[in-house]
Length: 389
Image 1: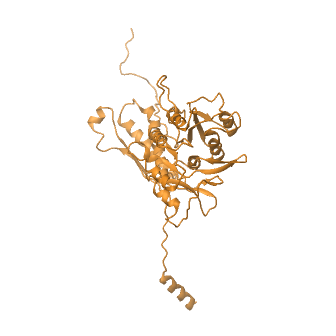
Image 2: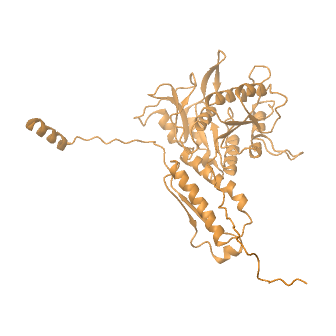
Image 3: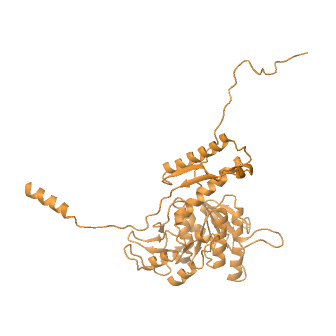
């Protein structure tokens, strides 16, 4: 019979390694989702299902088998894919008997018979979570409300076309959105539409695709202001002067509408830094990207024991991530720490703990103020130098 020494384990050496939590990685790259119609789409492109498009030639074949480019999607997808390189998804909906029925298909919902989601609601099922969403060519309150709710729920930026009639109508349209808790504070509305020549034919293009392309051509935490718009002209002229607060562009911006206008740089550019409620588009993008990163990287941590070491590891990981954002110039300052009062016994015993993520953000250069003044002291010093050699 063997009689072991109970407290003996090994006469030798054991090396245990402890790996830190994996890094959180960079902020997400742009993923664009567009919803609309494609009259002559390929049979392999299903209705009401987010589908990724790759190179532009394949995208055109999927959206149009006849070359007629009928529907709202073919030309806007072409514009986007020619302008910027990014991931593009589309959801194609069926055309209705009239414009109202088609718009209802775009807004979508849940099929009462099958339970399947349709229209804009399919965005939530996109394999890659979009960062920018739009339904180019559709300008109405129901479309804007649906886009805003999706922007709120999946943390992306919604873009909506203005009515393309006149400045006052565009400003009043923007004023219809902004209800608290609906995501409407994130809505970027743009007006007027623009004209673009494709294959020898001049077409009226929805303004939203120009703003989507501009937003996708810069980082998600940067403003689309001044990004060029590839067009022949706008459907109506919008005046803009950099030193004049009475121009049409300034009026539209003041009332929550991004616009397209000629600038001293030549050609047409995006003019506007703000959503319809005055939030900076770049601030909305930064908030979305950071919040999504926190959510996505937290899943592997769920169920872990809330030990002191674990909590400190999470704070260290957050700190490393934030300092990397600072080093990249994404944000100016960052601090992560455990909340000093909410991490109490009641919350801890419920499996709940609070992590504070404090950060600063850069604002876009919207208004430069130069103060010019004559300095007689400089003149006096100059004269003395002239007189005395």
